[in-house]
Length: 263
Image 1: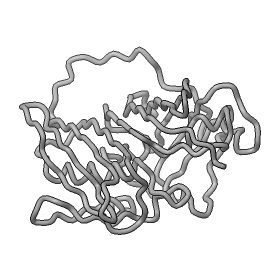
Image 2 (image 1 turned 90 degrees about the vertical axis):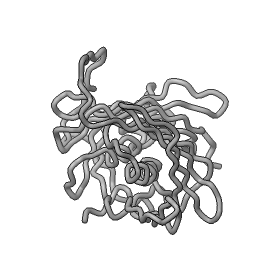
Image 3 (image 1 turned 90 degrees about the horizontal axis):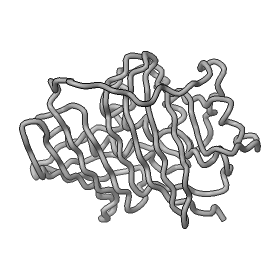
């Protein structure tokens, strides 16, 4: 079994809750990655949903999780011919940590209209990009190969730019086919784009993250761009796009996070 599948596995109980074991292998600075945690919640919802495709997953992060035992409760809140909607809550140490809403659709939706008013970002080839190094306590980078375009990687050596933007490539280090759950991880794996303009001077914890999956990738490398345009009273947004190498849009995301001084 691939390490990601092991890390997001859920065990169904008789009362429609799920036991989970949050892995230490998908963390940034010892804190489990938000997209990884969303994948656990989405996995639980998909276990009880008759519809398995094209979800919109939105999660509110209310308290920090840590590796170890937790459980997830799932409730169906609406159903129609096309969609099923679920509410899921992750509890750890007797405390509600994450609350998520998931919208799932049937896999045979007829695609009647496609229109792109944007194009994939221009990014240097992976071999010319800066590969994020594997560092202690950053175990996520042991599992994913992430590479930043040189134009936005200068903050790691003290060179900042005007625009809060990260763009680059990502894939699993150990090959695994993409699916809904792995795309949730990839959509939240990049460092905050505000680092490109401000450096690592702040902690940027996620408050809310929404990921809308549009297509399954047809390539191993995913092409990503994330932007922040406004920081107001300690809050910022991060808008993301994930593409595959064929030019197909894989997912769009919107994250609201805090911008908190490290000191």
